[in-house]
Image 1: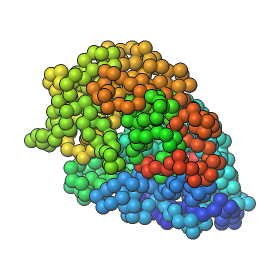
Image 2 (image 1 turned 90 degrees about the horizontal axis):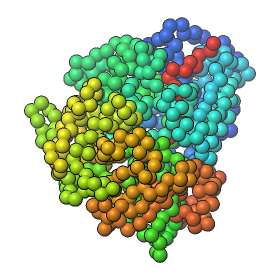
Image 3 (image 1 turned 45 degrees about the vertical axis):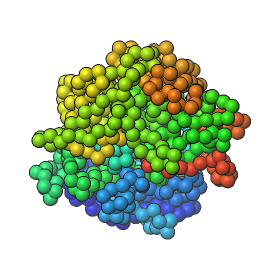
Image 4 (image 1 turned 135 degrees about the vertical axis):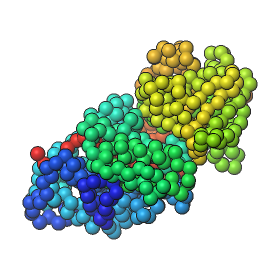
Length: 593
């Protein structure tokens, strides 16, 4: 379908968007030879053209083939960035995106039409001969080590090659891969995002200019000064109206407005506007909505996972054993709560640390956020200026793993550290909801220890997901004297935490051992004495260790084994709120030389 987003770009960008689905046997459609008819010359024209090009390439990909023949884990083809299952005021946010149509169709019967529509756009900018585009710049697609990621990369490579788009594949080790994306040293990359909490804003605020998770490089490099975006919020009662603005002047302002908006209906409309703006750039190519695939030995009782991707071993039991061996992923990027930005790292951190709140599962399977270090999750007090103040009391007798007392001052220090520009944490922006965030002085952040057991925090305005933020690892406490040692989080001898487990061994690139923390306030309720987290991204190795009984849970299996494993009762496909997607570096040129 063709969709005009005039409110977003000063340069009109007509997006030929219809969708991908069907079979991988498609031959190039519309193969009549032609000469490029549009040759952008100005910076604005080139930026608009490249956005159209990225969206057109998206239409060439057959998402149904990917989920049916490659990933095979019950995923749904994605035609939005905000994941399916995320709610809005009118139900499912994704089902209401772009007027309820999604950004393109994922109907299998529409794939041929989408290919044709995508090619018609591309033929405006490139010569077309013998069914292939001429002069398309060579691309490099990076992905992290994984059988599934590799197969999807190979599919994208082979599909685009049919149309004359050459793509080199580059496999990188996980931590190198994260850094390459973060630094913007790539053209196209594999990516994925799982919800941090159950509000759509967590899929949208990561793309503001200063976000550490902004791998696309919006508002960075050459894109920082590109002034082609429009934003008009006057119909929603705001004075904001920007014409030919930069990303920071439009998208960043829109996200800030959403975070300060207390009218639910308006807030969700603005979030849909933000997703429209993201999708118009073409820098996010949704592939499918995640499911959570894993294998767990039937001897393990008391295990649960949540749709945010975290897995919980605190209350597991195995007859005759006090240790469980699991494999979540390869070497974590960081086990500093403020610096982690990966789901596997977060799973370890929810075992190593305790925040004011935590996710838990009741006996009947209900998952909810409850008080952890706090005695209760209190209601906020609304102030005359619109801010909201929360005052939390800590439980009695809280201790760090080394036996020292944990105080409200530790929370104050940790939050100000995590939010500071000095630390530059990927998730620092998650403190934007707190009054005083974003100033040069981190002490302006409105969080204060009133005494050893009382913590006061003032939010800029009321938000619905505050309790869930308190359960997020970035909000976990750390101790000032511990983190003064920059390498504290890489060595068990210097690792001090306050959760159900402490780190007792870390054989890098091999295994991390978590041992029950007897200084944890709830130690009596922890049933599993030891969790050994083996480090691997080799799905074949994972399955072999699971089958021989060495590992009781694995978080991946070889793609080729999925169909046969579906009949195995130890094979699980659980719900997850996330989107697997391809991201494009917005500063990389796609036009003919």
